[in-house]
Image (cartoon, rainbow, N blue to C red; front, side):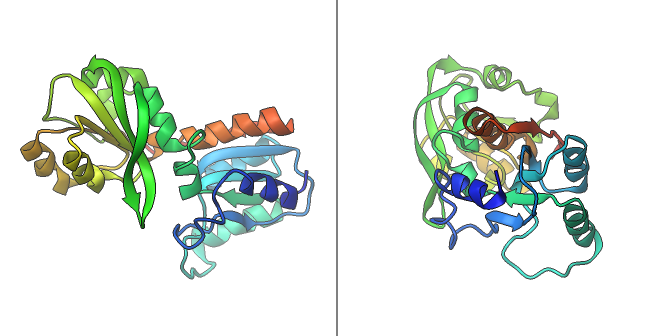
Length: 252
């Protein structure tokens, strides 16, 4: 397939056009190429390690959640120049999908993390510029925060924060992946037992303590691998293209 065909395919089920005025990310094609695409590398971040490993895998395109362009002018110097230079010299396209991949009801980061945690009966939770971004739900039976961490395959020691200030057993939970640490206030307002997000912030510690809520800050990267992995599987199944997931964890 060529890049324009793939762009049409992705836009057929990801709300790239609908969120063009909402998401600061330049979603869609960020760097084009001229070669037919037979292999796509999927990764969370657009960075040199991902690009080098994509080249080694024989990919003509890299699909990422966090791209290189974020709604403001940026000089093409330093590492930004080196990344673009590498892509162009290797005739490798870059495609980025940020918020549309976070919120997708089947493939998205939020719904996938919530299901992996054991939440069911999912409903919208939290808003960004008027858009529903996260999800909330209930556990089939009351569970400890440690059990939720186990469901997710997370080691408590590797979490940016794990604040157990609420109930010993959680019946409800809410999820906003990535940078949703301040949205714990919404979880408190909706009487959620356990809030799961990516980033951590000093200023929410006492908010959680005083409002007796449990909160897991698992790391921005760790909570946002789901969407690109789901996309890789979908492309492989539906388009019969070779796909590879490139894992470059940051610990943050």
